[in-house]
Structures are given as structure tokens and as C-alpha cells.
Length: 162
Image 1 (cartoon, rainbow, N blue to C red):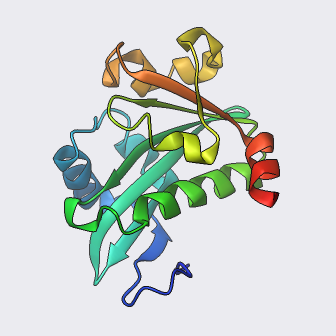
Image 2: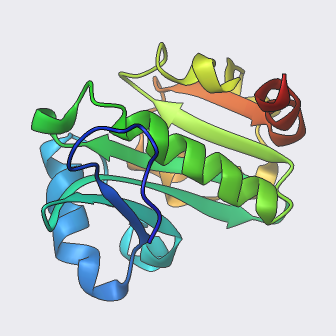
């Protein structure tokens, strides 16, 4: 298990999800008004944040060839503002980079101001790789009005080093 180095007492513990985490992940996503379509099938791609044994955050990268779909970034209401969401997204980007993903894409209806700090930029749906557009999120789990954002993973690596 990986622990953040933020120095906060009782930091969350981060770990990869297992199939038996489904109920807790589904409850967190539901409480965050995020879709469940396709989540169970990709539960192995989730990173979880736990505090005192309780799930307080999750995020996933579904892989589609050399592209990834960052999805289901959720943080429990009581945990927000403590850096857990940032730590989850950082871990997802690091994992994508380590597995040679070239692009990360996401859909959001509420967090378009959160993701630019990582290098994500708003793009048109046509700029998304066709393989990602076949995901449950793009086929209907998220509304057509959702903001589409893309990250060039190599660029994010260069930004992180500067």
C-alpha cells in the first residue's frame, strides 16, 4: 500500500481495488451522483483511498489501446478539501504513464475547473480516440452535455518535471 507524503495525521491509505470492493465503490459513486455503467467490469482499474478502514475516495483509468478513460473520480463529502482527489488523480496519471498510455480522456459535468491543474484541456468529442468513444461512459453513462477533457500523458510528464 502506498501512503501519501502530505504529513497529515491519519493520511488515507491508497490501494488497488478488488472485486469485493464493488459495493463500497458503487455506494460512493452513487452518493457522488456518478454513473455505475461499466464500473463493475473495470473494478480492477480502480485506485481506492481509505481512511480508518472506510472508503473515502476512488478513481479509475479504463484502458482502450494506447488511450485511457479517467473516470469515477469521487471523494466522500467529509473528505473533500484534504487533497485526496488530487492524490487519486496523480496516481491514475502515474499508472497511465507507467503502462505507456499516450492520452487520457475524461467526461465531467461538475469538475471542469478541477482537472486543468493536471494538464487536462477541454476538447470536442471528435478529438477523443474512437476506442474510448466506445466505452460505457461515452455511449450513454454520461450525458451528451458533459465537458470532454484530454491530457497528453507525455506532456503531463514534462509539466510534472518542471
